[in-house]
Amino acid sequence: MLKIPDSIFQEIRRHGEETYPLECCGVLLGEVDLDVNERRVSLAIRCGNMRTDSAHNRYLIDDKELLAAQKTARERGEDIVGFYHSHPDHPAQWSQTDFAEAHWIGCSYVITAVAKGKAEITNSFLLDGSTEEDKKFVDEKIEVLR
Image (cartoon, rainbow, N blue to C red):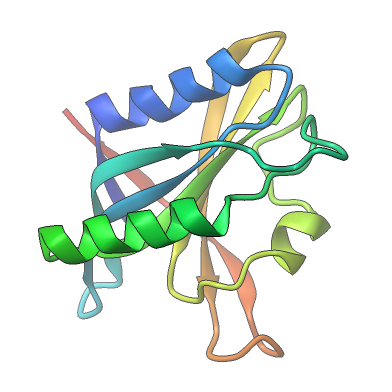
């Protein structure tokens, strides 16, 4: 399960609306509780979409931004617990490209469908497994904390 404060949940959705018709992307920091298979988000870090070939349906987080997010997490005593991006005019379901480019096993991958500039559905998928060969996306419940 992914637990996320409403303010951060809304911030992610706004980010998708602001970058429409291009995909937005970012990193989620927080804590992982393996005993109950739960990720708790405390901060969303907006990143720029570095894709120049098809930013309307692909995203790429710059290595420098990812390293900065890791540093921030370390300074806060937290971990990277997930990533988020938007799907402009496309469902909030992972694509084959999303799957192929997902490598952080144990992290949540949050996708917001943005239709005609308006955020609609937001879903999360846990990248489960132990290696690249056996990784898989599993539907993950989102609990928005009010």
